Length: 204
Image (cartoon, rainbow, N blue to C red; front, side, top):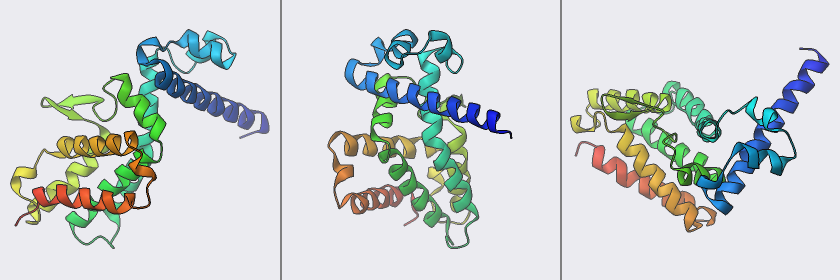
């Protein structure tokens, strides 16, 4: 990649980040209903066409936020699935759940903006058999099913990934709204919550 092309890529990346950051601030201050491409352009001092080069609608901005948060979670999911240190499916699921919580808590304002928007992008970009579905959920489901086959999880746990992630999102939102994520004991609190959820899935 030449120097000119590299600079253009960096400029594009910076503007995309500025657009998302601006949208986060606007949603927090004014609500999602007042968000518009035109308002974002005015705040950033750029043209509407520059914004629309990346995003045609505000829904696409929310979708990009969700993908940004999920990208790291998905990378970790792939790594953990192949990591020999985690010998049981339960250990893998536990680690994935903790990573999910920490990843979203690490970007509290963006997480709130996505949730407050009311746009169904946080993990249900599509539906499968009438249940929420997202590419990030498939890795969780595969490990969960592996645990069922091994006798670690109850057969009733099959197909419950969307419930598990909904519960984790609820925990994250409560932690963010009440600033629990900023406390020294947050990691321990997250571990306790995850262990409670896993207790309901595990074979006794």
